[in-house]
Image (cartoon, rainbow, N blue to C red; front, top):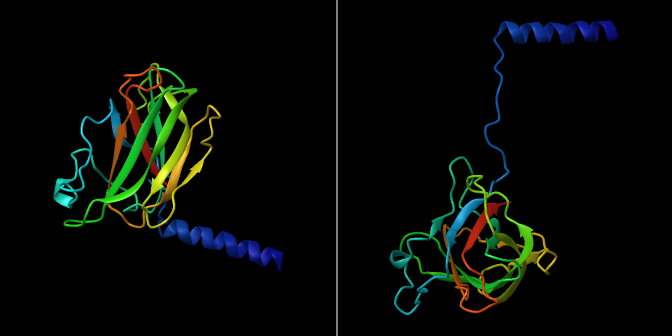
Length: 200
């Protein structure tokens, strides 16, 4: 019986080879790399005024469309990480807005604060270039929320690692993050801040 099964398996292999069985290479998986949401820069010199700039057409030039080539989108489950400099223990404030599609309103998602830890940004996630005097935020706090589902925090209590802000965007297609209180004008404020996102 076993001999018959073995012969059958070998026969199937020969048939597949004869038919020119196709091999496949996986070019993309469910894994998402980190994408740049906010380029490294000082705090925003102007913020969104919802009384006059609350429409789709008025979204800032820095707003990012959450669809990446080869990845499913728009994103639902998403996480954000922050980094900046030029020293650990520097602080900043953040605010996230989102839009669905053309002619939809600007919608508030969440706001809060952050503090840089001691884990250095050795290489920037976007291009692998070397970072100097830049640190990952290890502390995040959410002050206010407006999303359909509550955003949460992970490892965000000052452990000198990488704090994560994560949640469900429920199909929003565009997103924008404002950074304030980070121009280094006081001894506690951070300098340039950048923000990255990934799907999960």
